[in-house]
Length: 588
Image (cartoon, rainbow, N blue to C red; front, side, top):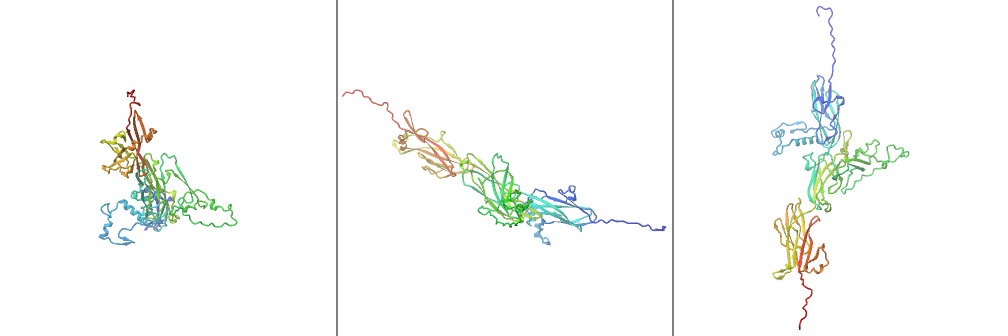
């Protein structure tokens, strides 16, 4: 500096700071709800239902003026978005007029076969992400990008699943030259992945099989049900059916299983016993007191929390679980009647379907006095036979059997006794008043006389009824008119089977046959009293024969219904005014 003898020295100090990045996680999109970076865990929850898509958010903040690229990947359950149309394996294909149509976003249009609803589009997208067959996938968006100076990037992590399980993974974050940061991912998926075809489009709707109303004692009714398995593994289903009981005081079911709760069965329903495993011989110096945690198999009896093979050795002592105890809420009584499912055990292939038969057998006649509601439900307990499906060390583990939500099917029906409504034409009922003099026709004695009356038979139930009519002499069936169509007039004791639809009726003509054979029964019935099916009464010199029988309605289920028939026949009687005739003294 001019005028100064010595120059001025300025000391310059500078502290160089490298790239500094911080991480925070949150369940909401807003950054204010983020947790501190010392507890970085992406926890999707313990009760994530299958086919739902919960989200977590990762917030990456750049505290410097350095622009840095970043890359985020998932270690094992990574999701690979489907390639857009016209682009495969990283090769770009120019958009042509033919492919332009497929790139356009389309609104649902029933008339257009290429149109999809938003729900269908979301389902197809989830299936594409889960095509690796691991049961779950985590989609990161954006997975790559540039972190601008003093800027925060919010990364959305969406979970997809199609089978239950407890999942664990690592989210690996790489920002420029910094060391990679691994963030643990935890998610427990619950729910039943199987569904019935009739409710496949409505996952939240309970499957119900309604059999309607049936007459007691009829033949079993069978319904075929298709069970879909959208999972990447084969699932073995063991069926159990339960009946609801009114005012059931029981609250809990204690289930004790010896060995596997749901072992494999052959086609005859017999358990498949695995080959025996020979034990290693004991050393000479080993005794039961010095074996420690290796007791003899016959001495092992302990509680188990699961029946899955992968957990047999998870106990602290390394013992195999032989006795499994399970406590469940009591909902119904275990039974195979009136509902039954076959086969009891069914293996449904992965990404395929299986079929079961649900059979309803109406209750027996003696068990039904009035209408009875038959409400029941069936539970399908699921098991996985492949080891890779049960667990992948450090990544996923799955329970099975009683320890997960089973597939549920509700079943309803109503059973009524076979009953027709009988309406005789006469208010007194089916009563016949006749006399032996009816045999005199135009001054001549005929061989028989028929006294006929009618009865209307109506089906007021809600199911068709099949039956036949049976009478015994001296009553006869002489005519049947169904739904206004008069049948052929015949004389018979038993008819063929008729079918009356709901709210349909028929008119039956029943005759009482008077003949000389009935008149001649007077001498044989002197000792009969009232209450017998046929008896004789005398009042003031009049003799009268009484007949009491039933027209039997025999239904095809074996039950019967009676229509009382009563008849009285007046027998001619002669009475004398005096026992003797005295002519007095007669003159010769």
